[in-house]
Amino acid sequence: MANDASAVSDAHSQAVSTDSLADPFTPPADSSLWRKNFLLGAATASYQIEGAVNEDCRLPSIWDTFSAIPGKVLAGDTGAVACDHYHRWEADIDMLASLGLEGYRLSIAWPRVMDTTGAPNRKGLDFYKRLLNRLKEKGITTFVTLYHWDLPQHLEDRGGWLNRDTAYRFVDYADLMSRELAGTVDAWATLNEPWCSAYLGYGNGHHAPGLADGRFATQAMHHLLLAHGLAIPVLRANDPASQKGIVANIGRGTPNSDSAADQRAAHLFEVQHNAWILDPLLKGAYPQELFELWPGTEPLVLDGDLQTISAPLDFLGINYYFRSNVASDGAHGFREVPLEGVERTQMGWEVYPDGLRDLLTGFNRTYRNLPPIYITENGMASDDKVIDGHIDDTQRISFLKRHLAAVDQAIKAGVDIRGYFLWSLMDNFEWAFGYERRFGVVHVDYSTQKRTVKRSAELVAKFLKERKAQV
Ligand code: FCB
Image (cartoon, rainbow, N blue to C red; front, side):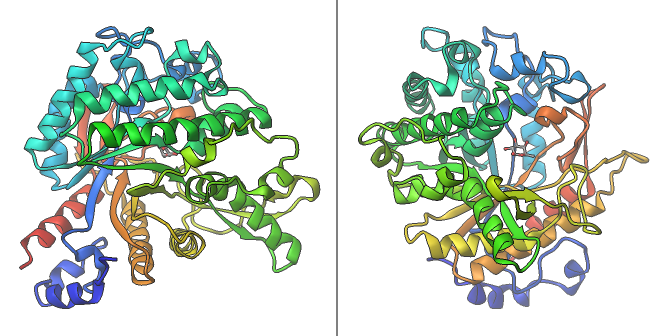
């Protein structure tokens, strides 16, 4: 493990001026964040920023279909234009580089790069080639997610993730991408947040494709994880120099009281949020308690599937946002009991940095083969307003500082964490919440597409500049 934080902090502490520590973001002198090899970057996803949904033979995705249904997305918003990044990508990369961000996590839109027969769409591919080449020229480390929820609609029409065949189509896609883009990608992530794809997409209908059945959720999850496991050796063969992994969103469940029943409820919350994904990936088995919580939802699993799914990973991406306070709820296992008087974000999510630390240290105990971790998303939405050309997003600055402190604590407790991507580089289409929820460190005026750097981004940039200047 390469986390000798104390040695590093000693070396730089003289170099850090007391002046720099006075700002509300800069980590304290003893933070492992000062290590130059701790990657600090920003993340986005294709459907949330690109727009240009009908251009260059892009096919419709499940999010085009879903967001067109009245009532599914706040204010009827869709990703049709989003941040118009498909046309403004050069300026966006310049902006990323000007902030000194060292890493960029982006995703590829599957419907942009393949036609319905699986043949490559050259125009779509060229977009990502240009983008990744430019990032390389700028010296930015690239993390590329293959599937950040924009499934081609024609595959959904044949059952989507309920159809085992979709996993094989995903492998064709991963094969094409890794042959075409090898050498420009530092790290490949197969899937973003399978929990959301399976549970929100097929279990409760909050996300595309909008189906709602517990049995669908577990079967979709199985096919998603299978797609991941089948793709890993293909990515390794086509692009051996890059890292391969997957991104999971993890949830902290805390008990509403000390009672054994509430403690059990919190445990079950984490079983369905975390172990449902991490156990098959890292232990090669689904947690039995999941099917006690959701009886009758065992997916159809073929011989060898779990071995495929548990192929070794080079890294695990972790996305963390908030905790859920839960109480026992008889047959349903748990129910959320929102706490009063706690700090919340524009999403209503509780700000709870300790949850990130506690989950990371817990996983490090539970999974002996836990791969190196990158925090691939963390951030918050606030109702940011441009006032005299500036955005002073004080809550975000404090949020980021506190979560980076939690990451530092986990590193010091022995977890191998190698980087952190803030969500998000810029305000974007926040799925079922549309454009109202602003997660960016850069503000986007959707009527003019003007980008304005928020105070949080300025402070991250300032820190990165100081870190770089250290001897
Ligand atoms: C995550 C998603 C990401 C973004 C953030 C706020 O679940 O991966 O696209 O919407 O939430």
